[in-house]
Image (cartoon, rainbow, N blue to C red; front, side):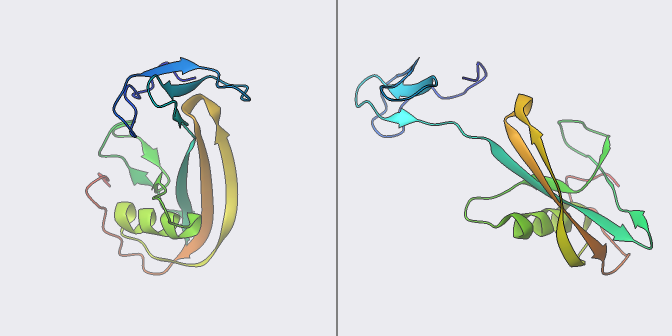
Length: 138
């Protein structure tokens, strides 16, 4: 159970949550003290790409925290009801202004300390005239 959890109140009835192991479960969960609803916290998918142009990889310099000013691959949180590749391509367009073709899966990284999974696709940059978005310095 994450000590950093922001869960405090039940989304079903508004009562306080307590941390306990529900009957039939093996892990601590947030459980409503009134209605008994179990609130699960699950890992977050981070989706991104390795954009390649003429044998070089396009990187983004972050304009936001965490890691302000650091260089990284264009990536971000996958949205609900969004496929992993669609999310990765959306993040690449938003952060780097780049569109890709010939896209295929590249790597999956487990990041348990951050409760996340990073999923990357590799593809060819269609047009080298990329314009960084508001979350990107360069």
